[in-house]
Image (cartoon, rainbow over all chains, first blue to last red):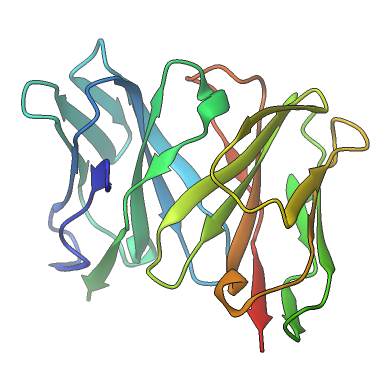
Length: 113
Length: 114
């Protein structure tokens, strides 16, 4: 039972263009959403988050959009840079974070020069 | 300085053995977690500890036993290892167990059971 879904296993984007990574969720109790970035042989690194009371959060080149009615969130990276090539995980939590994060399967973003 | 560290990074062992993975965080966080990333790349929560006390235990076989000697450490002991235990195990920590507290992950331990 996948509560957080990332339906694109990989995405290839040209350097300088916008990268859009998508994530869908099924559990309407989720109230906090996060994006993590992961390089090979390293642990996930926190990138950006959004509370369910907001619909947009921006941090530099990274913007996360949340559409609660559609149970959908997306991560926009603009402009995309070579160092952005990594696996991006969408994650969500319910109430207290003690329940841990529920992760999607990840999307491998490849930035082409 | 590494915020969340795990040892060993790689662990290869035979079925039936007992092994431990250690995790330490130097962030002063109260809550620590163990996640398992299986062959299908799903990252799933296994345990979380808050101030040395277990606060969640997902449907994990009782062959897996977390031990928290102090709030900076959360070790994972695995008894009678099985082939299906092969995975990458990630330790993480957060300031508190609050839902908006960022979780910081260790580099992972790749466990291979032969």
